[in-house]
Length: 358
Image 1 (tube, rainbow, N blue to C red):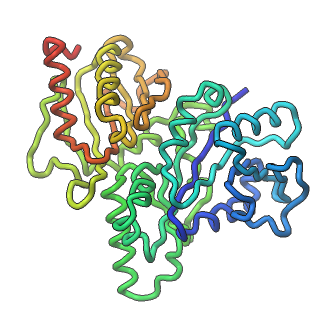
Image 2: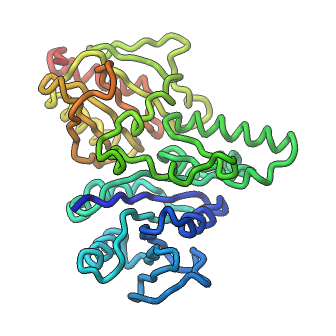
Image 3: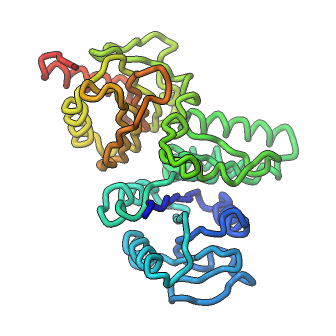
């Protein structure tokens, strides 16, 4: 049985998250979707409710399933899958988990990545965050919860831009877009009210592409969107520190996003031990790290790594490199951890291994 992707929908209070969810549920393209919410009242069930199949599960006229969280998200997803395999509920090929407006997305992501029962049934699709066009910049500035939601998302959805009707509001939106890019340059930003908005782009965030049945690492890493942040480390982790090589998020925010790039291949042992040591010492502050690694052990097959705070997903070997470049790229989103400190960390780690990186 193929793993079912789980997408986390998050967004601060009043950001239009529930509105977006209802639009998804009404879209025939997503009729085979199961939605997990905290309360049924969060989605517009009036007129679309077919029947109560269980106390916690209802089927909607669109073909979607809506499920309330029972106890914790892990048990809810396990129970949902159990009913799926027993044909007690309609089949679904996607799950959307709607978090509360004040929720930190990291614990749910960690659960999906680390729990053995869930990993045998589901895969992490991606994190989608809604941002209010009018108040998003101020909310990010004043509330760490909102800032963190934006920082760890794969897709940032700007809502309520249809209410912008003058130059002052337009400047506010431009400020928001700049802030989002500084917080999370690898995320794709989509404006819900643009004519070319496509709902399908909300969910093309996974490493695994269900349409091509293959791994799409370039889309997953979104390396092209991160080209403004191009500090490189070469083998021994010597980094360039020219003025134009800097954290684009270092001014006015504790959350930073940057890419470390290494030219030379590394051993799996060195990679594993260095990342383990990093998470032991800074795990709570490593909001997210994902990357593609060139190893000495299997240079023809890149290794994909993905971690959230203290938890790493099982690494995945790809059949081939996505392009001619065989550099190791690690994309970090951190809280209070600078690029310089990570450079120093890796340099120190190498020195304790007799300076040998290979």
